[in-house]
Amino acid sequence: MAQINSIFALAFLGCVAALPLGTQSNVAHAQDNDAFAPPAEAANTPQLTEEEIRRELDKWNDLEITQRKDKARQLIAKYPNTRTARLVQRYLEELELYDEAAQAQRDIAAARAARVREYWRQRVAAELSTVPNYQTLPLVRLTNKADQAVLFQLRGYGMGWTRPRLLLAGASETVNYPVEYRRITTAGTTTYLLQPGNEFVFRQSKPDEMPRLYEAAAAQ
Image (cartoon, rainbow, N blue to C red; front, side, top):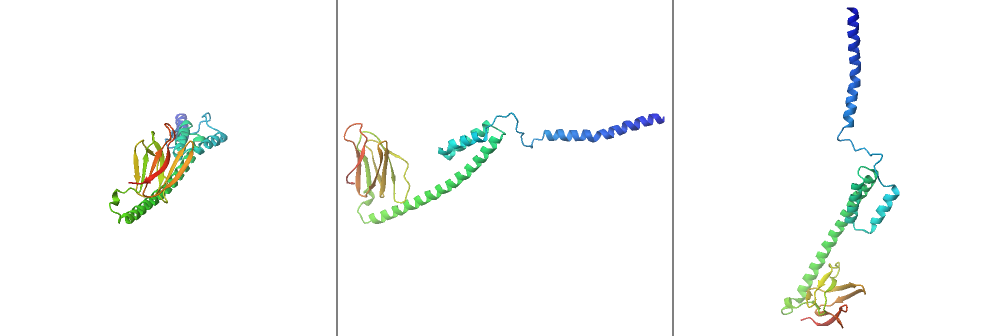
């Protein structure tokens, strides 16, 4: 009987001694499968070297910020969970900050341009209020008498250039405040200050020739 009890005692102690080892093994296994643990960087995952990353980013310097961000996202998707992706992600986050700063400057410029336009609108309206039928008197008229459409830009005092405006052949456009005119072609850039009360026409001396702007007469 004493021998049997000794055997049971040894078996019990063996089970107790084995319990912590099994518990530790289960905990370690659970940690290996932790969904919140950061993904391991595989040793054989292809990625770029520091020099290759530098050269790649250097290629983007002439691109717009939105284009750079698209390139960065593509590179991150191509090399996921790598040091390459982490470096490019940081670059992408910094681009976002620069883009926010640029947008703030654009908002300031747009607000300033709106104030300038309103100033000229009120000033012109005040000066012309004594002129009979001044509402029908265009300050500046542009007429395209060429056989092709013309692309140009305008800007008022203290304002930025408008988007390129396309004036079709035979069409006219009027502006109700003094403007600076700019036309950019393969032959060069031409700018004029268009004085109020005049008409300016695009003409050409022969067909298919590049149209040029001339002052015609007082605007009617």
